[in-house]
Image (cartoon, rainbow, N blue to C red):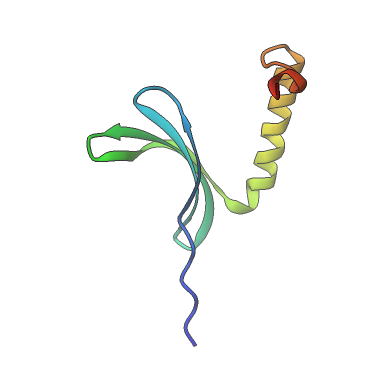
Length: 90
């Protein structure tokens, strides 16, 4: 019986960084390791192309990354760097 093909890579999000770049969030596999990849992509005439700039972590680290980002968001709100949750949803 053959193994099922990997469902990866999967792009799960894209955030505009500036006019020429975007941050692409993807689930990937490299050399048998499943990764969460946040990579800068540059706009080219042929379409977005990934650059060497980015962060790739073992997918098992995703919950810790999420917790750290949640703490960063909460701290930014406490410091007044982001609007409070209530105002942001209006």
